[in-house]
Image (tube, rainbow, N blue to C red; front, side):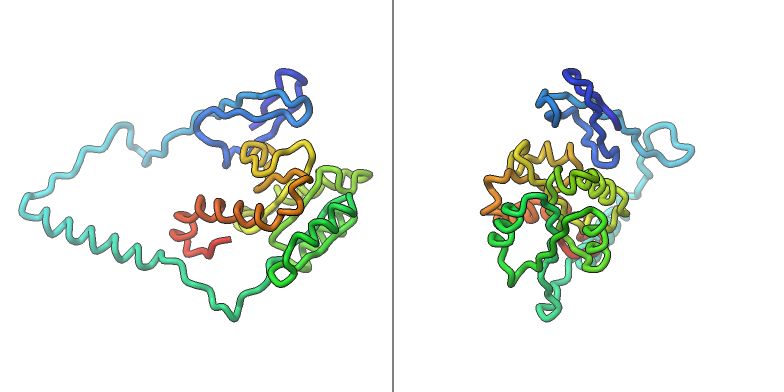
Length: 234
């Protein structure tokens, strides 16, 4: 879905699969004008050939207790199968973080804010180098500034690469946008920019606690999907 800012006419692009059903507001990245987004109505799914509501099937009164008991057993069996498995502690690995930042001071500040025993840090100066590192290291977290590799529009190139990932891989890739134009933990601007987390440069020293809080919220949001798909949390 594409919308335009009424103040400066800047185009705002949104992923149709992630749009909510209710109208919402975002801030224009260029002029900071509040823009109201009206998501298109979503068609209710229907079975082929069904044009109206389904009538309930008649059930004999004598069969109701057995039917309810069978339904309860089926639900319990499904819940047991969907319980997430606890990963083996011996297989635990450090999270791999790729820094795509143009400011060397901010890059070092982020390195100092992250525990090396829990996170493995990679960094890149150019977008092609960053994409190559992603392929080789399979980094799970990308920390990106919009001005990264500005001479070659590296920030836009990295977001284009992220948006080209399959849904399965994208859900396992956490993108953090660091910019003085953004507020830390602003979920609306994170959604508008197609990332998982926004961080203001002044909060970089607390990056690890901010990141882990955001991941907890993310895992809670996707907990039903992960359980239904037998997937481990991020």
